[in-house]
Amino acid sequence: MEVVVCVKRVPATAGKITLTEDEVDTKFLSFAVSPHEECAVEEAVRLVEAHGGSSTVLTLGPAEAADQLRDALAMGIGEAVLLETDGTEWDAVATARAISDAVSARREQGRGLDLLLFGNESADTGDFQVGVRVAHALDLPCVTGVKALQIADGRAVAKRQVGSGWEVFEVDLPAVLTIKEGINLPRYPSVPGRLRAKKKEIERIVPERRPAGPERLRLHLPPEQERGVQILGTGPEAAPKVVEILREIGVMAQ
Amino acid sequence: MILVFVEHEAGVPLATSLESLTLGRRLSKVMGLPLHASVAGDGARGVAGALGAYGASAVHAVEDPRIADYAPTAWARALAQVAEAGDARVALAAATDRGSEVMAHVAAIAGLPLAASCVAVAAGDPFVVTRQRFGGSLLEDARIDAGLKLLTVAPYAVPPEEVEPAVEPEIRTVAPDLMEGDLRVRLTGREAADDGRVSLSDARVVVGGGRGVGSADGFRSLEELAGLLGGAVGVSRAVTSLGWRPHAEQVGQTGARIAPDLYIACGISGAIQHMVGCKGAKRILAINTDAEAPIMAKADYAVVGDLRGVLAAVIEEIRRLGSS
Ligand SMILES: Cc1cc2nc3c(=O)[nH]c(=O)nc-3n(C[C@H](O)[C@H](O)[C@H](O)COP(=O)(O)OP(=O)(O)OC[C@H]3O[C@@H](n4cnc5c(N)ncnc54)[C@H](O)[C@@H]3O)c2cc1C
Ligand SMILES: Nc1ncnc2c1ncn2[C@@H]1O[C@H](COP(=O)(O)O)[C@@H](O)[C@H]1O
Image 1 (cartoon, each protein chain N blue to C red):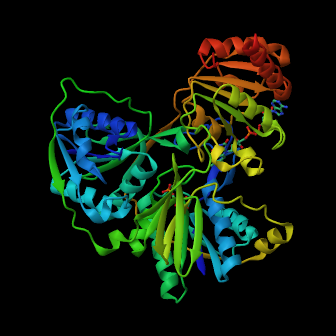
Image 2: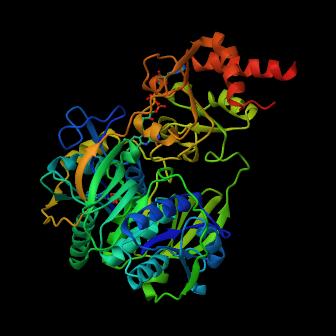
Image 3: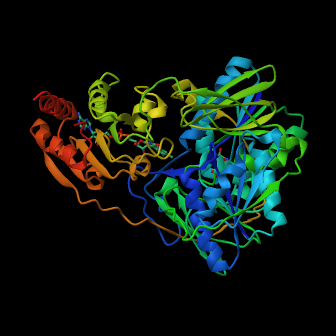
């Protein structure tokens, strides 16, 4: 089983986002990949553990995105590819083209491909499309939003969650799957895993940027929803006040 | 034309599709173009009548027994063909799982950019959309230059508006010209959810628990309160990452979006990725030991204190009132 998984380096902040002139201010931020992609990485590692073969993590981003590749290597991914940019933002069309070119090139070099995994959407731009575009470029079937997966006999049974339960899709491999958080619980990398990851060689490719739009004009913060908090009290003594509010809102069973 | 992809369940259009249709109608007015809808799947033409109330003058019903059930690529192929045949200037869908997926396929088939999760559109020259990033914690204005503009519409961004009087849409049958590869991905089965609990997205009350709950066991009191109020339990990502609760209960950017009458957030700090999931709540009550926690500023009501003591007292008070 040959698995390639694509991740994207994004700024991670739990607090308020602040903006510089035209960018998210990342001076005080750490970076991560989206939770969906973390689960895609975990899934790739598990698939190779279960079926043998090898896994590769791929990202398009600045040189610093090597950190995110090393995180994936530390979790147990075998190889890493960096499609290195100068740090400017790439749109989904350009990103998908660079990724498909890189994957095609690998296949031309005789590397197998059974599964190409993506996150359902990236954490920053949330375009919901890079995986689908790559599937078209490579003429592969694609199931999105996968939250349960079984592989047997060259086929994937992929399920996704809907309000009333699950939808099931069956596709032949090779296939593109976009993964949703919840499919698994990603492992914490072990210390030896981290040490090994540090020493691994990362393959670097410099793709050509061909923007296709939409063209970003400006970023701005959504209007703050000021709810004007009313403090009901401190500790258990606040209970009667809380229940009064529950009645007022009309959520108490009568 | 302005073309809207409409999703439906057993012949009833989804509310999110009516939102897209409403945005589509605004664009059709500004751009002076007719508003059409495209519907696929079993019972497609049955949906037409309901769409007239939202101003659709024509409904393209995709009828092909091979793709009567959901088939993302094939449905997208049909939509792309309707758009091309009718020289559509804008094609849009709700940013739901299916809407986002179908539009991504349309974009890939047509080789055009796609603006995802839009909340507003200024249909001038240039054509500028405002779209969500970071799950909605940040907005972006972006221009689209393609002849056919493709976009998805963020849920709740455009309240559905009916037209007076309703129009009687013309129904046109679409027999799509499918390629072999389009049929590779089709819905092959459905499985029911395995529990009969109140679903998060429908619950009128959600009792949310975060890292402050302290352990998987700690959720008993949250479940009890949710039970008393006929609600559901929701959690933060800290909780699912620790394996205390299943991911199906996670609220936020990579979890469920909820819109209950009341969200009771216990031991949750209020990270932006969590808040984008619960900002649809009519009221938020936060219970937190830290009066300075970010959630305190984003709530309507707050209790400062240990959630264990507060919940126990609230539960006791509800029971006391119930038995008197
Ligand atoms: C791309 C991305 C996507 C994400 N998606 C999501 C998502 O979908 N959903 C989500 O929730 N998070 C998401 N996160 C994670 C998010 O940033 C936060 O890390 C997470 O929400 C924190 O969970 P928490 O509030 O439970 O924990 P903490 O931030 O650790 O907060 C715990 C709170 O509990 C309080 N507390 C402690 N003990 C008690 C007590 N005894 N009684 C009362 N209060 C107490 C503390 O004061 C504190 O405020 C995402 C992050 C990223 C980067
Ligand atoms: N720059 C990138 N490098 C590698 N993979 C990416 C990149 N951008 C997006 N992806 C992948 O495509 C998925 C969907 O991204 P998006 O279409 O931006 O929502 C992400 O979850 C990643 O798996």
